[in-house]
Structure formats: structure tokens, C-alpha cells
Length: 567
Image (tube, rainbow, N blue to C red; front, side, top):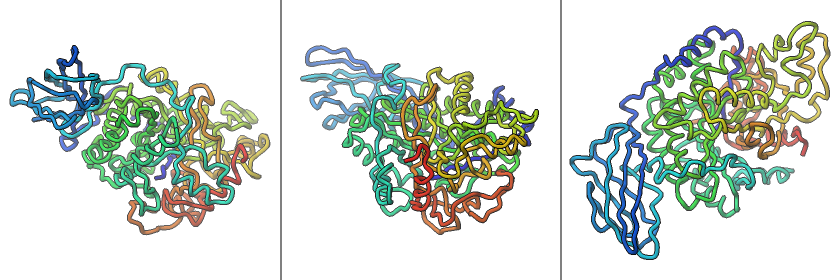
């Protein structure tokens, strides 16, 4: 359940600038193959009511792949509601559940095509409209589409966040852990089994999606956060958290992963909760920076770029989940040490836009974006700015900054938000920043700028991010808890959040056989001397780490010791 970050400097600028021009110009085609077929639909339900009776019209729009025969289903909210006589479909009713099957003349629906059916009905007491529909067993995108503007501008404002009791129990078991265990953290759904719960797993818990939602209601929480993290060919340039699905298993991702999550989250029982989904960590930026035409790129990233698995998978997730009236989607947008160069900044915003309008989705299904997920990049660097100069040299020439245009997450997130609006996202999108492990407090935290001897002494002496390199991502030694979760902390930022639950490992320090799909990446080995992606620097990882997602007591204790603000 970890995510990997790639540092990309000016050495790749020419190749990436060329790729970015193609994306921006609309010349890159992301194909959808026939093997990726999936049901997707929008429903418009209207009725003309009178005392004891009504006439209903239902329009079915196919926004997925072509259909050859369909079955529409819904449940009447009032047990007295009955279908009496229908047309353009064969209607059956059992209790409150209604099924309408296509006729020979209207069963074929091309992508984008619509058909209308209707019936006369009876009711007593009240005649509320059904709000959720299925087509061929798959929950439709909209049901009765919620009115525009029904979602709040910032789902984190004015309500209490959900505290995962499984994470809280682990934190409470640690000496001093009760100081932080009541903070809201996200629930990671990193495989299909996690939807129903995995009681025998070291990296998930016994609670499934429904259990967490029920517990959120019991707590009186106002919002709950889930990480949607199971794309085909997941983490295409990493090893420690490759997923369970192969690069060609997009249909399985849709039918066995996204559809069941949408069905549970769309249950009207949870309509009072603001359900926040963090969409597919570490995915879309890989299509810009980690294909084989880049230094250190991989064939797997080439594959998922060519077959559209990432773009169409994200688009499908956005469409299915975003159509639920109380669901808020935030797409992962890397971090400043990955995308801060102009050669990555604009191309990534374009690929995010491409995904947001893929598979029947629109930008309206995107409430915002998140940066620094499960990473360690400092929220703010107080002792140097990207505009500083030392002895006539810009700090951008320092080895640490490496010509980046940003030196911390807050400035990057605010600038990237403006870029995303410029490519077509709604002007009211908000950003989230994961501050779970970017505090960098403790005795090693600088108290002022570095020496003005050179740009390197100035930056290295004053930077609070103490990693050997911005490309280091695994169980970083010296890291601390960052800002506690809170809403509206800065302009354009919806919230600081703890999406990565502190204390959960990024990956094992050595290879550990397991049946949870967790591999071994040398960047988690404290003896590793690095590679081209991190400038051949030491990994900076803590020793003794378990597989990704498993509890790492030593790291949790270090995070508390180095918390900033201090505990």
C-alpha cells in the first residue's frame, strides 16, 4: 500500500518536453480495446403523480460499451409502490424490487444511445422516486442524478473525520501513541479482498468498506476517506507494491473492484457521510516520467500507457464513484520532487485531464487533487526560497533543488492547482496535502539558513527535509509526523490530511515471502547505494521494516519523536 516517487531533473527535459507537446496537442491516442468492455449507464426517472396513482417514464442512456440486451433494476423506497402496466419492457416485481427487461426491438444500445420505457403504477402514503438503478447487475453512474451544486465546496469543513479503529488500536498499543491515535486516517483498498475485509492479512484489516462506513455512522463522523488503489499493472515502475491485477485486466478492475465499491458507497444508508476517495496513487504521472524512453523507465509503464489501462481505469473510477451524490474524488498528483520541473508539470496536467474525461467521465467527477501521498516532502521550507541567490548563483543550481521550480509541497500544490484549472478542470477544485510524515522535527531540524559559502551549503544547511535525495521514498530515517489533519489551512488547499496511516511500512527492508502481492524494492534496503532515479544516493531507509502496509513500530516511534509541530 505504498507509493513510489520519481525524481526527474533537467537531464530528461528534452524528451519529456517533446512528449508533453504531443499530449497537449491531442496527438496521443489512448485506445480502449474490446477486451475492456463494461456496463456503464445514466438513468433519468420522472413521474406524473395523482392520489393513489402515477405514470413513470425512465430513460436509459448507455455511456459504457455497446449492449446487446439489458435488464434494468431498482428498489421502490415505499413498500406500497407497485408497477401495474408497463410498456417498452417486460416488467416484474417482487416486494419492492422491480426488474425491467429489454424487448427485441430496443435491446441493442450503442455507446451514447438511449431508450425510454414507462409504466403506470399505484401507491399509498407517499410516492418517492427511486434513487439507485442497476443495468445488467451493475450500479448505474447516476441513478437519479443529484442536482448540480448538491455537493459541498469543501467536504472537510465543519465535520469530524472518521478514525479507523484498526489503525487506532495499533497506535494506542505503542507507548505515547494515544497522543495521535484519534486523528482521522484513510482506509486503503489495495486489492479486491479488502472490499470485504482481510482478517488474516498483515497489511489490511478485518473491516471491509461496509464495516468502515457503519463504524463512521456509529462514531458520528462527517467524512471518511478511502484510497482507491488497484489499477491493472499498478505501480508500473516499482516493485514493493505492484498490484494483484495484470496490465490487461481492466475489465476485472471495473467489474470486481470499482463496481462493488460503488455499490456499497452508493447505499442510501450512508448518504449523510461525505465519502472522500483518493484515486489511484502513483499512477498517471508514471505515464509522463517512467516510460522506457526516459532514464530508468520500464516496459510495464509502456504497456499501461499503450493499452489505456491507467487512463481508462481512472476515468471509470471517477465516473462510477463521482456520480454518487455524497462522494468526493481527489486524484493523486505526485509531489514537487517528481513533477516540479516544467518538463513534467504541464504534461502531467494534460494526462490528468485526459483521464478525467475517459470512460464516460467528466471533469465534474473530480473534486480536487492530492499531493505528497505517502511521501516525505516538506510542507514548507522556511529557510530558503527558490528565488534565492548565493554569490550570484540561483539556488536552483544546487544539487538538492536540481533546477526544480519548487522547493516544498505547499507552493507546488498551489501552483499545480492553477495549472489544472488552466487545462479545463473546474475553478473551484481544491488540493489536499498528505502531511502524515513530512514534519521533519526533532534535534536534526535546522533553526536557520545554511552558510552562504555556496548554493549547496546554503540549501543543505537550511533545508528541513533531511533526506539524502528527494527521490527517496521508503521508510525514511529521521522523518516525523507533520501538520495534523485540518481543513482550509491555506489558499486553494481543502485540507491537510493523513492519507498514509503513520506507522504502516512503505516496504520491507529485505525480501519477505508473502501471499499479499507485496514485492521487494532495493530502495527499502538501508544498505542500498541508490540508482539513477535518486542520483545514486543511499536509500535512507530504516532497517527491520516489514512488507508495505504492515505495522512498523520502530518507524511509528521515530515519527512521534520527530513530529513537527511537536507532540
